[in-house]
Length: 576
Image (tube, rainbow, N blue to C red):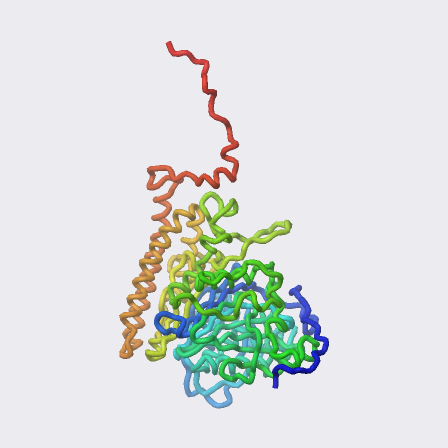
């Protein structure tokens, strides 16, 4: 029993700050991960949304070489007893998987590709659900859905076959959960049990060795945190239910605070979270409930405000009436800075969730479209630097290096196949489109399931959005307005299509071709934008007419007013 005590508290040592250096905390082995993730996730309970949906999101903010394909994994049935399910080491780069065992043609080997090799096996079940996946599983046919963000943790380890003994990554856990679960609670418990039984390893790059998922179904949602245990052979995990009338954000740092495993409605978790913390001297029962973030997070990585600013940014959009601090010392230990959950000023919806993922803190003191760093035309993105100079950019929610963002919507008044909607936006959210597919869709648009980050392909949705995003860098403040107008047009049309199909009698045979045609049409329209914008703004003229010029603020900042002076006011020439 974990609770308060009137006894004198023993001396407890706070968990050490163990900024990731590539060394295995649990076994002193070098890590072999190849990617960097720095994702943002949001969640909303059903009474916190306009229509009663449960919502969650994910932005996959990796680096170059990411695999942005969204793929439908078909259901399986009558699987023979004794069948083993292969477990793979997930690099997350393109191609994320090569093989025929998932039943998805997109993963069939192409010339020059090597088959993915399992690092272990677990028992297979008799049948599995169909689901969508990108780097992580997204949504299954039962409207169970997931969003992911990598977090720092005080322990780390390597995968089996790669210097460690752990079998489960967050990629694998999310896939198994959607293969086998018809509720978010079931998915969370299954992932926790598998991580404890088979061991868990994290991404292990600069951002840390732990993970967090938003997990929802049509009735409820959870925040799920997991990290390796101190032996590198098991895991520590906790999950907290989002209150129905509240929203939450996790941005590369744990947010679950006091865990009460006696409250089985609102909390789930591994029993070892208490024994390990007590053994390490990081917590004692006499202190009351264990603060999961304080004990097991390794805090913000990269720089101060890396996580906290995004939490502030999301809550600022949801609840502008609430004045949250913009400064703090260390939010790992300051539990009162940003809450795990907050009640929004007004109910949220898919559109607002998308808007948060497009946020550069517009109109606030942290707006990255302002200042010299934004250039002459207010570009809010900040590219990675190669300098040895000490410094950091503000970490925005929207990013140029996002491979995909999705909003998942689960509606309890419709059959799961129709009630679940995946709104999928390849590449950077600010210049992409959230395009809908039903949870039970029989197929996805080919343009969304096929891409190679190293080969320009005009039939690939990812490349349409990436192309537009990079053309917009020429004159962002102007071109972004054209992009936003097109976004509003096609997203409103998509919403109308979803509304028209959102009836209990809709079949997937009816809905799937309409949703696929809509997605293909959007991609075709998006490819018209680059040429349109080049003609409209070429040579800094507007339609080859009036000059667009520069803003006075930027001209002053770059020294325009200190340029060559005007000619003499009294010329020597004499008019005769």
